[in-house]
Amino acid sequence: MKLIKPLALLLLSAFLIMPADAKGNNNANKKAQQKKEQQEKERAERKRKSEALKEFMEPRDANHDGSLSKDEFMSGETDKAEGEKRFKQCNKNGDRTLTKSEIEDLLGL
Image 1: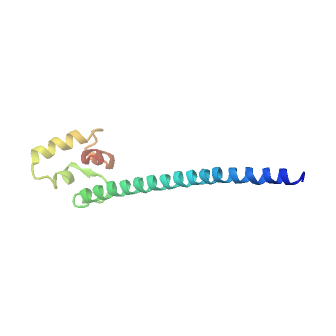
Image 2 (image 1 turned 90 degrees about the vertical axis):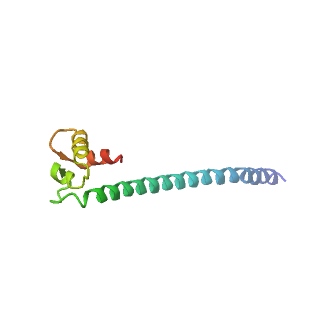
């Protein structure tokens, strides 16, 4: 008889603790899923930016050096005066070429 009470208490406490542990695992799974979804969103955004940059650069970057000289940039502009103005605004370091980061700023990426 003395053994039955402690055994019953042990089973009851195990029964009460188990659902709490399952909730903890469920929360951990939710957090892991949210983290995975966030990583996928970030990956998709990087891919979108990369593709937009590539689409802009490919027809202009004649020497394939990853930057655009003024002549390369102007080759894609229909309004030359507006193109000159945009080039000057985007060429922040004044080196007469547009780097990838300057082009990303130009494109709003």
